[in-house]
Length: 500
Image (tube, rainbow, N blue to C red):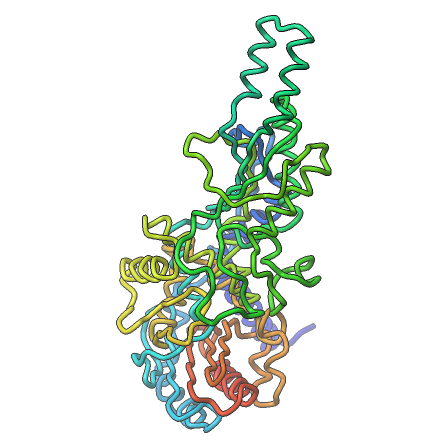
């Protein structure tokens, strides 16, 4: 039998474990039936396509089970009981100050550490200085997209036609046309193929599987109309402005266009989960249209010549549509893999929602306006792109921690994918191979953070449970760093110190 003091220690540990578990559940939500909502939506989205008519609702779909969060809420103590120790700011200055002076972080790095529950800045060094954020800018991209679009929004890729002669022929047949007339109609169709248009909606995650399902639905809709030969067109007019990112042709990003498949990747990485550099096509839209035409031919349709770029008529009738996964899932994937193509897609969707041009300039205006509307400290920020590849981007470490704190706000559950999408130190995404040194190992599995790397620029921004069980948001920005590897190790060391 355990001694009384042992029982007390065991009970205390159990309560503390339940408290931390409750906090983890609340932060990783929204939850439903034991899954993050984004994960459940991802599973539901597999293979979802639709034909010319896309009715709402799914008859027979079971209702979700009650959320686990409601049970655990009873176990959680008041927020005030998890307050950070009163001496934490002084302790952070003592530990982080000398580490921030490391020459591996360049001459003047910036830092911000915030108590997420209260918004209090516990440590700051040049926290209001705009600096190049590299890929940590994707946190701003994520918050703006989720705020403007909502976590359940999906991006559609459609096939349309303005040619209704198939329907007209069906009506003629209903009036009693004989076989000779039908043969004449078929011959006319062969002489003048039905024109269909593949319309890009800006889904940077469209893959061959989605395009195949779209071709299947299109072929079925055309056969129902009595159409057997088509002229394929493709429309990328949703986006405007330059297609090439200012960084120029680069393995880290495809030309930014409203239509692509496999992110324009020319190697086998398109078959796996996207992420990481790969050779890219110079014409991802044209390539996607070629693949679509091939898939139509596999389904018994004839095509008249190669696909040509042309804007779809305004009165076009929709034949088929396929949808991306929800924005919540896209945000998580963008952050975990640091996916530049998704980032540029999301800022353009934000611009479209705001009624601005879907271009680099329009996206910058829309994102900054959205963040300003959320009363976030955007002073000095320049968001020239959504990916962080632009070396002229500027953001403050104070804004990054404010974004993370906003994503943890209990009143803003739609922003939670910003936190759940952050890579886990030593385990996932762009942090999988980090936090291995002795002075950073304590952060492994404890820290979730977005990385940023350009030549001479290194950054890290994320969350960690610090002393007293309080969730902390942190951001470290370094410019003119002498080397990426040493800078990353210094950033890992800095953030690991927040765990103790």
